[in-house]
Length: 389
Image (cartoon, rainbow, N blue to C red; front, side):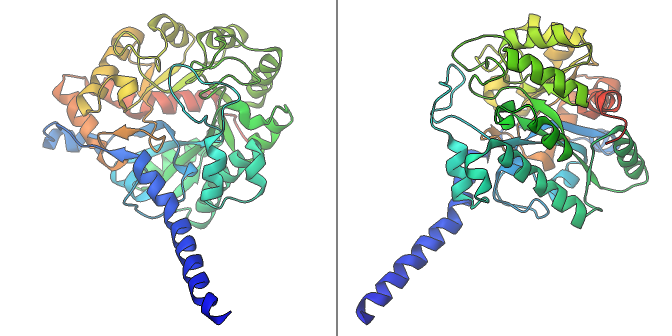
């Protein structure tokens, strides 16, 4: 028996070590930075960048096994890097379900779920293994914990008063970052309208209706049906709007987008995307649908990865922003990086100065830069977040 004890102990130690290292190995393979040609960063660009109020409509950072209070050598976003990039406001979205074989063309609704395996590998609480609502709540709780223990670093933004407080703090020279909580796909409801109240109570204010497959609310841009809102979807959208939540149609079918626009006078967002007229891929919806969103007061966040802007470069991102302004107007375009969303980008959030420099180099006006880099996002939130919790 003693002879067996040592090899068993060694084997268990190896297994525990691999389990500890697995989350980092997975993320390093999925959230990469590939620097390419970069614009010259002038003194004028640096000076302007430091005066911007910068906001980003989409990052999936709470999905991963990292302490966001500490600078990491992997991924795209953490609080030190947000401060380095001069980011004032970041939307953190909870990812709760993603299909095996994920692609932009078509995914089956019954495909094996990758997030279940990731939750197990990252040692999430057992309640999250079988409940998508619990996964959203668990990721939201990470931000509550940071904001509670490190209020000088992170402030939750759940209503207009909290947004105004954040802006006052920034104006007074604090480098605190505001966090808006959302979810990527309303399958986080677990098919129960009562969970809207649970998500709202946990601070979620932006709700993506679909992700990579059709769900109980309606068709995904990458699903099989192409359908619009279901009866359940209509009830869910009405309940979300009544609660004061903002609807995100970044992964929704065009039929769902049209149905949502027909049901509300409030603006919707496309948190992370590109434009078909600039980059013709299955990830991007038509220019006509984007114009309908903008005409209703909505906002489009431009992504930083190849399927959104057809290249992994600073220039491609800025070209997409220019296209969006020309198509929709300067009040309807924002940043929507999709950081930490299993994408490869040309820079992480600490290097947002590169966007400012590239826009200046391409002749953007200061007003256009200020609006795209954050003011459009802040104005939409100021007008559409609840007045109080």
